[in-house]
Image 1 (cartoon, one colour):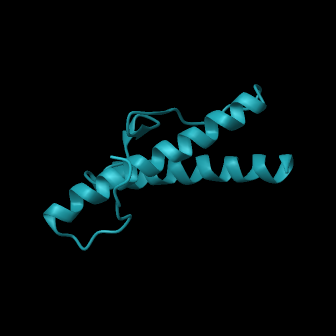
Image 2 (cartoon, rainbow, N blue to C red; image 1 turned 30 degrees about the horizontal axis):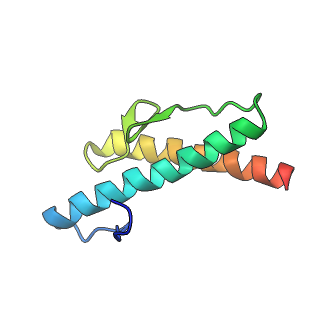
Length: 91
């Protein structure tokens, strides 16, 4: 998995979709790692959505159901917004 390149874009092709989904899962893992570090430094910090195994707030980050995917992306953007606010305050 590591040492490979995963594209965070898709041209809609079936084979590229798998790579895109894997890239999204790996990106979400990076977001989760950053969140864990922030919570370690500031234990009172709690993010609104739980991230685990390619899901955020219980919704898969992989392409699938449009409504669920859109909501999962919204949750991820919210998570990133909280991280940005924490970083801005901290550093």
